[in-house]
Length: 247
Ligand code: HPA
Image (cartoon, rainbow, N blue to C red; front, side, top):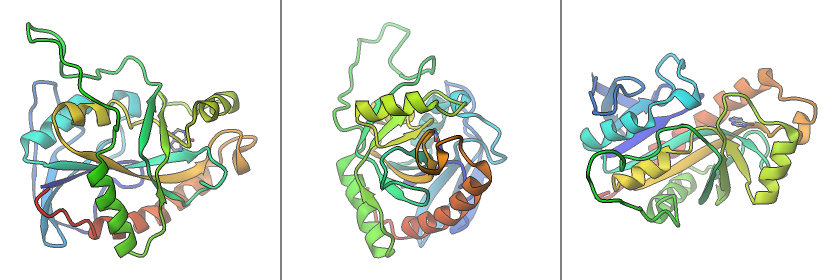
């Protein structure tokens, strides 16, 4: 069953026919909110709002362990993450949609593994390809079927937040090879891998990253919300076209 984690600008999935909501308890505490079970174009699907339904949980306080655990427990077989990002690469301006293929993790102090404590043997999961290649192809096909242009591939820099970056930090991320910057991609992707759940992301560029384009002197929050609203509508069309076939 498809699970969708909605980020900023997508706290509700209006094209999901809601059947029930369920509070799931996990050994890691409370998820960001109840899981919403329903149907998306006839297929069963689960939705959770990463920042809570009222958008009150900042990126560094999201209980990623509880969210991914709850989705697995509820029967998810794969996870599509929706997230807002800043565009670092010049061609990734506001309104661009990117299906990233790589991650660099700059977050700190977040609980980022299920494999700690107790007497269990040490586990190192493979994370060479942090986004599931097959699920990425499913998303690219869905975007194509929805007639929505997306960028195939991009390196996602996961920052700690909740503050936005300095211009020099963005220069550094670019030198590191990052194309887009966000605050929620990790440890979410790694935790999904630890639970063997294929995971991929649809990211929406809400703004030029700090010091770039029209964010040269600062990020314009007023236009950011309009862009997010419009682009998330396009993302909804893509989500409607996701065809899992036994995933
Ligand atoms: N930086 C980090 N996270 C973000 C940004 C940004 O510029 N825009 C949206 N999420």
